[in-house]
Length: 484
Image 1 (tube, rainbow, N blue to C red):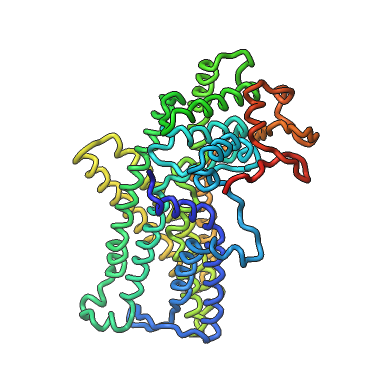
Image 2: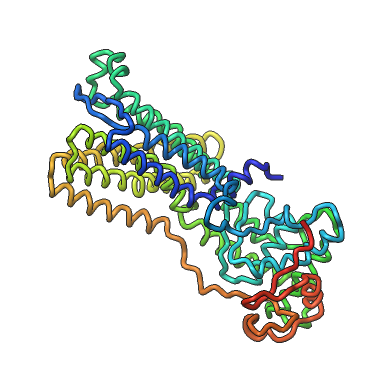
């Protein structure tokens, strides 16, 4: 089974990522204001024998608040003014020891799913081989054609967070290099070498890009394996600890297939299950692609890996404010520099790692490692060239109050961020169809999709009978909470 820590990180990144981003941004802005008014001390950095002030609290505060919020905000939801998402987690909501309550919980799963607006799949290599996960996926596909299916590979959040920390370590290493005591510790010859900080940054970032390429190679192989596994999928091959549960699951799948018109009511059980296999083989690859996008990783996570440069820009601006060197052009140049790095160069580097990792799948053994190494250096070359020969040059001219270069910088930002967003775009979903279970109490607000809403065969009636529906205020039905 999948380790608990992997599941926890996956769920934390999925549910807490947005609020962690908001909190860390607010903390960075707070420290920015405090630094600008002189309430928080700054440090000195030396560049080309010129000393200037720069903050560090925006970076440290935003990074610490991001991880604290990501891992612990759900513990504080009861004291927060807004309502947290309501989640049905099968492992905790279905009784695991009492067989009677467990059976009722299993039979009530469709009732929970019909009142859910999305489904989060913590994907591992055994996801399509377990009967219960297949059953939940089956019910969701039957109730919500083109519904919101979010796929979260269980190992991928660790990659995102570790890569983020490696990029932060790269930024910290460059910051330490420019501290006065570090400059004094270096020899005069090395201190005045032109490309030492650039080389240092590249060397520090190299392990992160190498790790990204390796992980993306693994993920590209897994995506390929998913497609092959789906094409050979059969619900009859799914593993189940108790064979008695198999009859319940298969019977419910057949009942819902008939209820919603996927097969006719006189279809045999074997033919109905074969039709469901075909549905999974056709729909799951499309839904996975819609969830992950063309690059294989959502754009927001690619941005998060390089997001430390946003508070770095704020620290830099606050140093200019304290030194009295800030101007509209310098502030605008720094903001455009941060946007280019975080929203364009960083995500494009991640996309390049994934694309080259796909290419490396053609090779095995020593050839594969050579391909990964070459791919890493290609990504590093793109990243370093884009920064040192691209946005750093534009930033240099913008700091000298050049309106033309500010305009060019802005235009390039818009163009390349647009390219990154286009590259990461997800396929448009068709208009969602929400099929709802018939309500035994006769609530007129509850409707099923198309002609299958009138009547249900006996197997579906049995499912609905065990679901223990009770009416709610705005129509519909909810399963009565009979188990802990």
